[in-house]
Length: 290
Image (cartoon, rainbow, N blue to C red; front, side, top):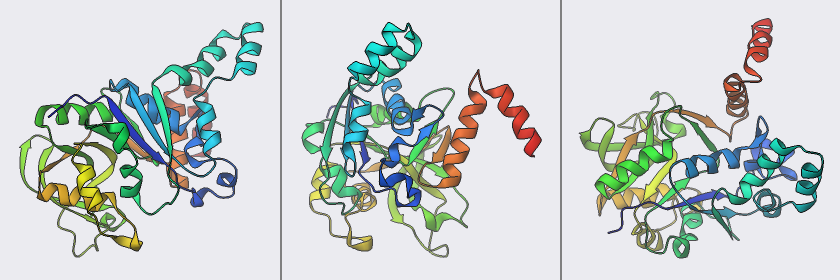
């Protein structure tokens, strides 16, 4: 089986209801972190992980999302004529950063249904999955690259995880395992979506990054509706763990929940503190508040 990971799938078809009224007109993945849309930062993670082909699963207001990754001749001409070459370079980069395609999710009936739309794109190869609610930062190796390295070593689906407090495990999913294959890599036996605190058996929670073997599509085709009558990606991963096998990997890096207003604020503050032009003034400002 092919182990080289060259493709990534990014589902971004949601309505972003927690950010209304902003998301009435603009897709949630276009929420900015400083001056970049979150979706561009997620796609940069993909590119920095050595992946060349990206599929966006798009939905509501898809034309706004798609236009960010296409040429803008009028804007580019103006920037060039005025000698604003740094801005021109920043504007043109999304057009060329990867081979980007889009597919429309007509009916939103679960995360597994979204992933199913990528089967033709994957074409029998392994592929990364990055959910648009999760922005990751690592100052060493991109989180997706960490998962890719594990997949290319073992040839099994890899789920990016972090340990969370059992007090909040019911907000996530819980991964069970029977053994550690090496530091931070675990042989997964079960994953339960949003378990009750008293029923959860593990504090390992998947957090928006995956590398999947292509047989996941066979599993999705045979899924039955799960929570809320939808087809859940978590259920497909659970079935895969029990058949061909899957791994859990505790990644290194920071995760920002872009589906949450506080998570969004944290992302902007922390990215601002890392920005060479902003960091000192932002630190001074924050000190006046605190």
